[in-house]
Amino acid sequence: MTTQARSALDEAFVRELARAGVRAPLFAWWDEHARALPWRNGQTTPWGVLVCEVMSQQTQMSRVVPYWQAWMSQWPTARALAGAPKADVIQAWGRLGYPRRALRLQECARVVASEYDDELPRGYSELTALPGVGDYTASAVMSFAYGERIAVVDTNIRRVLSRVFLGEESLGGSASPLERALADCVLPAGARDATTWNQAVMELGALVCTAKQPQCEVCPVRAQCRFFAAGLPNLGERRTRPRQRFAGTDRQVRGRVLHALRELEPEAGGVLVYARAAELWPDRAQLDRCIASLDEDGLIEILPGHALRLPQ
Image 1: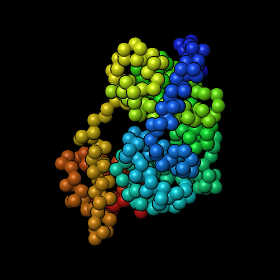
Image 2 (image 1 turned 135 degrees about the horizontal axis):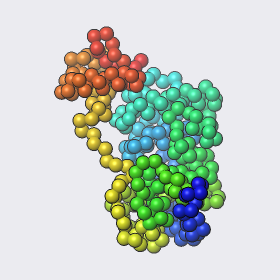
Image 3 (image 1 turned 180 degrees about the vertical axis):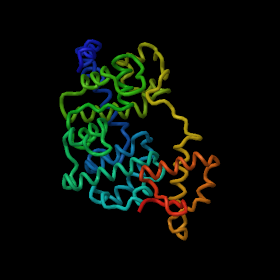
Image 4 (image 1 turned 90 degrees about the vertical axis):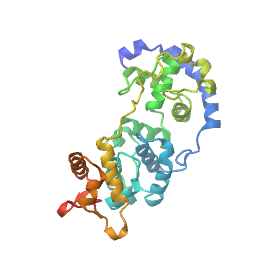
């Protein structure tokens, strides 16, 4: 904890509030209301937890479940994914969004298979050295898969902790030193309780303490929440994750191209001729730019005559 963050946080008060006032009702709520997701409660391997965390980045959990189940059925281990054809990996990613994550996950699988004998490493530095694994994903794997005592800081957790303990709305951008200090301060001492805490706070943020319309009337920690007591000041004024425009963006165009390639009839041989691709979007310059970027990202291949296909 930095000196500045420490001075802005009444550690003793916050820690005692978390221990005596928040933890018990939050854990009771978690026991009753936690969603039965297929990667929770030891139902999957550490690799399965990492796959879930990568898929869940900027994607609603309800959309992730069927993709995760199909993915883990097809490639249950890092080694299995490492040897899969790229076209199959992109096909299986479907419409989860941000498909470059699929190839980064396969790059990660190759490292795990070759350098760690198909066993996901347990240490923070080893995890964050893997392709596509940052602070949040490494911390989540250590907590949810290995039961280590480590603070997990995502959008939902930041919002709940800031509201309950600071009485303030969580702002956008990266986690501030104060928010990280707060997450460390309120983390229970025992590893098992710390894991439950991370999961319960995250679940509360996803289901109850939402960004724009928190359901304070059913919140288990309403009585201890400084944000509620203050009258929800500046609620949603700056959302932690601002809503992004999608219509007309390069993301939409790239998605249309990939969807068209995934939906090709067998007689097409997996190849999309350029004349057909040109029908996908009226702005030819934008379409060409997006096709070039997909090729640069390794998500498609451009064949002679400008035909397109998923990478082989």
